[in-house]
Length: 375
Image 1: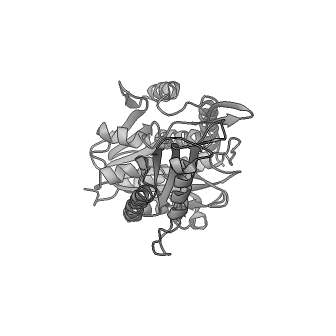
Image 2: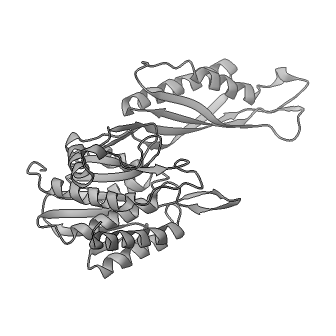
Image 3: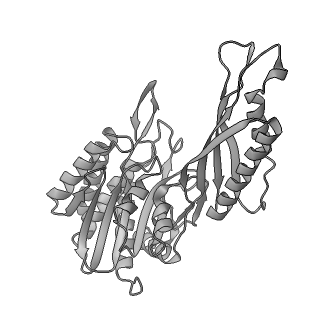
């Protein structure tokens, strides 16, 4: 590795170490925003923040085409060594470092077009991308790139997928509303536990084509109290609902609503519910994916190119293309020997991937800027 590359990699690792040591949860990323803003200001890069939320936008170059790059900046709130705290266990600290690295490389090389860097808050809540869309930051974007570290079982270090096909997910919060009854007189009430258990069983009777990945399961059930001689008439439940395609998720939601109505009629009890935190499945542009392929091959060689990755996880990155269909977008999956897994409190990965990711991203952006068919 050339001396300049070593210096560049060391700087990116210093940036990563700072971000890793100062995690902030969704919509609270004030210090993270300020740190990136100061760094970009010191580099002479134009950027702006928002009055009503965290996150920031940076730009280099002028004119068209407009190529955007997104980094998620929030951390998770979880228990680490017995203490609940903010923790970068999803790799967002690496994503920010990679995007900053690509910016530092590109700012000396761009001769045409605009590159917009979106340092987006609140990916973990599924609401940050929607906020950025509402701000108009992607209205004129032709191409959009993202990246995500991948677990070792999906993509090992040395391999990079040119696209990640995330699935769609929605959560449902529900309530069974009734009156308690005496344990000796079950005929005087409806047992909310039985109602919710029946719904849980009925979820397994919803069937689509076996070629369509999907799932619906009850992930929360709350009812009853300390007095075991009371039959609980009310209770709360939650569902995690997923599908690989947005169309199937919509059909699955309708089927679940029908099951809830049937259970309500069967037990003659009121059931209220609300869908929460929908995150769409990936809509991948073949053109954007092709630029990432070319960037991967240029930087790491054809042997580093992995197949497009299909994963049941979700990412609000895909709201950009759902809300602005003109955008051609793709997210690359970076093999980094990540273990034990994403969101594990002690997640680790091979940090050499930070410079590799920055180099690939910069190369891919340059290919997109050279495209004559972006408008």
